[in-house]
Image 1 (cartoon, rainbow, N blue to C red):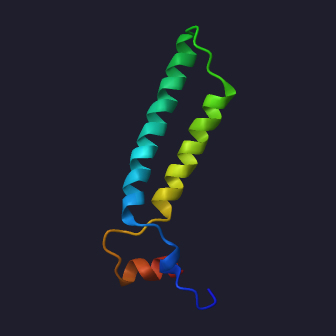
Image 2 (cartoon, helix red, strand yellow):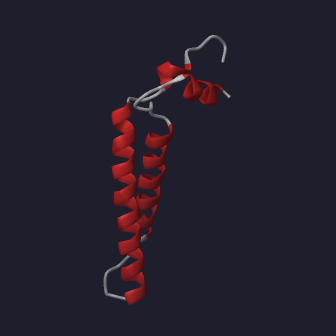
Length: 82
């Protein structure tokens, strides 16, 4: 990595917790969209809602993947380096 400290690019552990909550919210929103679509209510499920759910899913997974663990030990460091 050209002598770059890879730990400096990780987000704090609080971002991982926020990522899990955001993932839960996005999944519940997706389930609600599917239920509304199948029950054929007069609610217009638009292209923007689908893209917003996709964005929330990607953002939450980014937060989960690129945040520090609560306890960063040598095994986690070596896995991240590989």
